[in-house]
Length: 581
Image 1 (tube, one colour):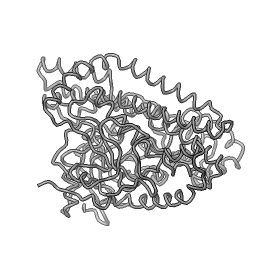
Image 2 (image 1 turned 30 degrees about the vertical axis):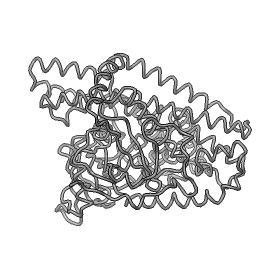
Image 3 (image 1 turned 135 degrees about the vertical axis):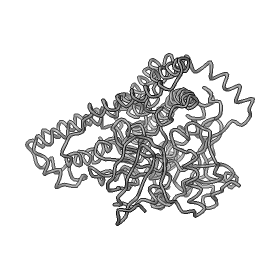
Image 4 (image 1 turned 90 degrees about the vertical axis):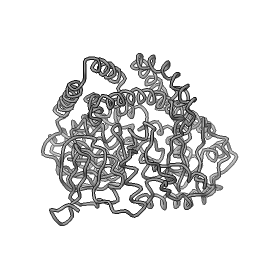
C-alpha cells in the first residue's frame, strides 16, 4: 500500500493573501502553476530545494516561466519519451514539484522515435548552439545594463518590466532547450554503463575536470584574498562583521582603498549574481557585496590558499583512473560502444554545462525585473524599495498602467510580508514530500538532479511513518572521508557562519555556494543526485560529499561531530561521545 502524506493543510485557492489567479497572464504547455487541491494527493510531490526562503509574489514568476513553461515546452519539443516536464504547486510560499509522466506506451514509443532523430544533430552542434544562445542572452543582458531607469516615466518603466519578463522567459526556454538533450544523452550513456556492469558512482567522474565561469569567479575571489593579506588587511577583516566590512575598509584608507578598487573591478565582472537561483527578492553582489566580503573574510582564516591547479589535476587523475577501470572490464566490442558514448558526453558535457550556465542564466536573469520594480517603488512613493515584489504580475501591471494606485496596495503588501515571514520560519518543518510516495521514480531529472532514488524515498517514508533511522545513507557523490564539526545552514545567507575545516550540512547547494567548497572538508545534503551542484563541485574540489540523505538537516544538529564518507555514501553522527549515535 502506498504511503500517503496528506496535503490538507496546504489546500487553498489563494496564492497569497488577496490574490487568486485568473490564469490569463502567463502561458503553460501541459499543466499550470497552482495551489494544492485535494486531488493532488494522488500525485507524488517533492519540496524543491532551490528556494529555501520561499517565494515572494513576483518571485512566483519563476514557476510560470521556468517549470510550467520552460520544462514543459522543452520536454514536448525534444521530446522526452517518458515525461512532459515539471509542474508545481504552492504550500504557503514554498514550491513543491512533480514530474508530468507519459503513461501511454504507444506515445512513449512514438516520442522515442522522434528523439532518435532530434538528438544527434543537437549533440553534433552543441558548442555552436550553446554559443549562439549564450550570445543571445548576453546581448539582452547588455541592453538592460545600458538602460537609465531613472530617466523613464512610470509607463515606460512598465514597458521595461515587460521586456525584462520577456528576457526572463526566453532565458528559461533556452535553459531547458539545452538541458534536456544534454541530460537525455547522459542518461542514455549512464544506462549503458550500468548494463555493462560499470560502477554507477564512477559515471559522473568520467566527465569531471572542466573549468567553468563559476570556478573562474572563485579563483578571482582567492586572488583578492591574497591581495588583502599582502596589504595587511587581515586584522580589519577579522575584527569586523561581514555587513560592516565595506565602510570599515573605506574608513581605513591607504592600502584598504587600493584593495577596494580591485574589489570593485571584480564586482563589475563577477558581481552580477545573487545568493540564490532565479529569485527576484535577492540582491546582487553589486547591490549588496556582503556575501562576497564575508567569504573573503573566512578565506583569510585559512593558513593556506586553496590550490585550484592541484584540485583540478586530482579531478583529472580521478577521471582517467575511473575511465581505465571501466574499460578494463569490457570486451573489445563493449569498449567501442563505451568510447563512443563517452566521446559524445564529453563533447556535450552536461556536468560542465550544469555549473557553467549559471553565470549567464540562473544567478542574474531576475535582476532586470528587480531593478524595474525598485525604480517603480521610488516613483509611486512606496514605503520600501522592495514593496513591488510583494505584488503579483497583474497587480504591478495595473499600477504602472495607472489603473491602480500604490495606496490601494499598501495594506496588502504589509500583510503579505507577514505571510512570507511566517512561511519562511516554517521551512525547516516542511514535509520533504507530499501526496502518494512511490517506491521508485523514472524521471531522470528527479533522480540525477534532485536525488529522488529508492533510498531517499524509503527514508522519507520511514520518517512519515515514525520509523527510527539509525544510519544516514545517501548518494556517494564525491569520494573521500572527513570528520569534523557540522555547520547546519538553511540558506546561503548564513555562509558567513561556515568556518574553514567544518562540514557543511544543508538542503542542497547551488552555484552561489561554490566558494564555500574551498574551505569546507565535507558536504552533506538532504537532496541532490550525481548531477546536482554539490556532487559536481564536490568532485571538482576534492571535497567528500554525500547527497540525497533526505533528513540530514533534521537529524544533524549545528555543532555535532559528523563523519561523511563520500565513497560509500554513509554519514555518521557523534554527540558527546566517540561512539556514533
